Amino acid sequence: MTLRHRLALASLALALAAPAALAAGTSTKFEPAAEVRGTRLQLNGAGTRFKAIFRVYDMALYTTKKVGTAEELLALPGAKRLSFVALRDIPGTDLGRLFVKGLAENSPEDQVRKHTVSTTRFIEIFSGRSKLVAGDTFAMEFVPGKGTQFFIVGQPQGEPVGDDEFFQMVLKIWVGGSPADRMLKDALLGGDKP
Image 1 (cartoon, rainbow, N blue to C red):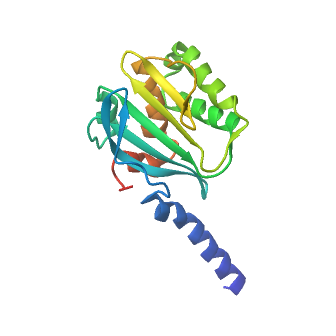
Image 2 (tube, rainbow, N blue to C red; image 1 turned 60 degrees about the horizontal axis):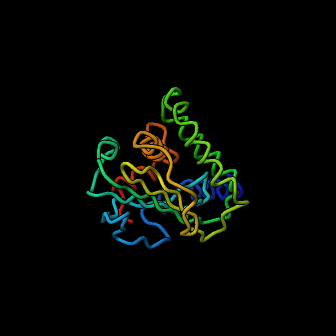
């Protein structure tokens, strides 16, 4: 084997190992607790979303009590929060498109159709920005009976949308059967310590 082949194999091995090595922690220090409309939540887990070998965003899941499986999370009543920090520039249209793709891949077609108005709002919120830049924050807070409130850089984006079923569809983007990133799913469910 030539030196060139050895270097290529070593580079490939490093590229494949990078997400696994970095998934054990995030570059963002998420707070151990958050408050959503008077309800105190605790950090359930946090991780990094990778696309190929690139870090896209850090993400944290806050819940009323710790859960370790997707089934426990989806059955858990009460407020929840998803917090994100962009790690690179992300075009708003790309983010909206990827979220909607995640909804479609993890929920039945009739359920996705049922929530077309909320899904359309999802797209509008992110497509309304040309891009999120590295360091920008965004979040989704679910309050039972109120719906899902979106935030970009700490600012609420319109009124809450959807119901409990819609927010469960949103959660499934990251913890469903076809999650956006399997290592991130494990981290959000407490498999890796933030």
